[in-house]
Length: 91
Image (cartoon, rainbow, N blue to C red; front, top):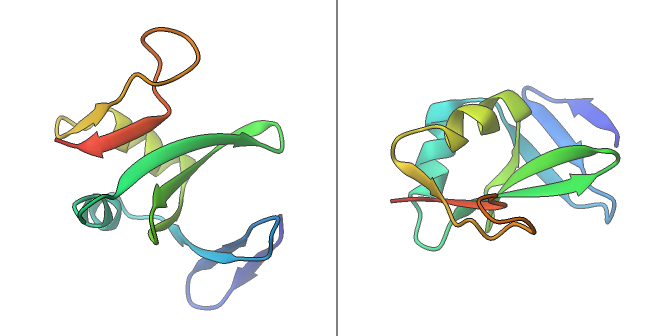
């Protein structure tokens, strides 16, 4: 993954789409409040990657950890193993 600095961090995905790196918990929560938006965890390049979809962007791992423990955010428990989540939504 390549990184560019242009006033804010940008991440370039494997398919060439650019996602703004979300580095603020408040910005991430605002994006998650949009209708249909949610935080997802994917696994790529040997480490978890976090995105707010649709049209939110890539989330810094430290911010994602804060979001998953936020009282207004709940996991869907849709992971491979019981009790694990890969999708989180605002209540």
